[in-house]
Image (cartoon, rainbow, N blue to C red; front, side):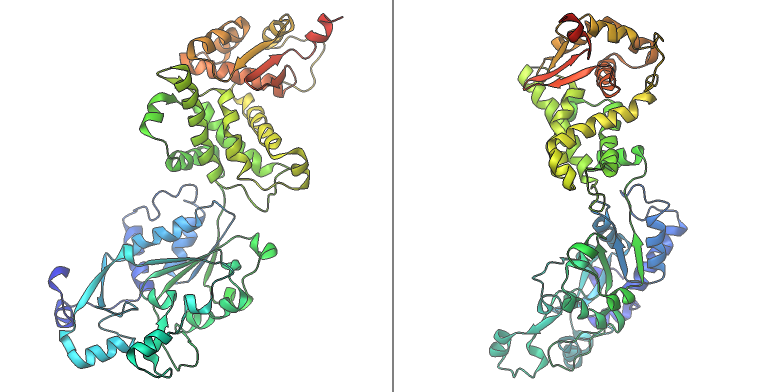
Length: 488
């Protein structure tokens, strides 16, 4: 029988429907997905062999779950994706505040309604997307918010005594009966509020004021927490931790390719931007490497973490920088340039927590240096390695480029807002640079070679072969010694 034809409790009984707890529901649907090798958490990358198997084991074990990890590790996303493991629809007693199961009612309202009307009571159908509730733990959360309290307005309206349980106003958790309930940043919840969760997790019931109330709630709890919170702002009280079945530790992407997939999936780029701005693969690698460098940087607080959101917003800023430049110059198409990476500094400074020494350096300086560190790390993958110590008079692949700068009195300037024609002409004027690209990256397409030329210049700066100066309107590259010798 189709659900649109099941409108009363009698219809439901005739259909052969059987009640099932939410944890059994999640478990059974997960089993079906595992049997057919269906992806259980679509759009979550990098967890295929670590976090997701642990989460699946927790669901199979019918556990409440705590996802523990630094910011930007997809904890809330995974909790929300658990909705896809629920049945498409479940029946509820129509009008019930706590989604009563018509076959197993628990509220006074539903029990008395069934007692009065029997199989004729109307039922409604709740879709799986309506069976998700989420609460961000903040210090101002009260027991009344999440559990419930006496409602004096309801008591006055119904002319009931405060001793009557019908004056209770249910909080978020009872209203999430037969749903997935997520509490984000659990350590931020005051200890006395955490204590109020003990009975719900262990016994499945709630306590409100002085009422002898026992509601065997059916809820899948998912908590998220940041390890930093355990020392800085609050902690998860030990008895509550003991009642959470599985604690799963999340992590950041461990390789650039995974990080690129996440960034590409999450970045909000318009069609006009993607049509106007081309992004070389090397530019994407540099962007992700900046984040990897930030996580290991001595000036950045590692305990706070560097969110995956940093690379996402940085990509959006990077494309917008190139877009703005092209619009000003009147170009109909452009490609990301290394100088465009200066436009991502605001996306970096807002996403990192600096230690004391980092504060002394300044957030913008730290961010600018991260770009150089990323280039230095990737440079040997594309061009011959530059040794820190070189033998005197030993020839290197970069001698031609360095000599060009040595003989150039004014160095080489790249303005931020150069149009495509002038930008390419400026780089083409450095003949040894073109020869270097042809020798070591001959398969790169014509447009990508200009990005590689800039990449070489920045790389030579990182390895102390050239100097780089930032001006208001652009960047200047100069030989570190030529200016001194020419001035003698």
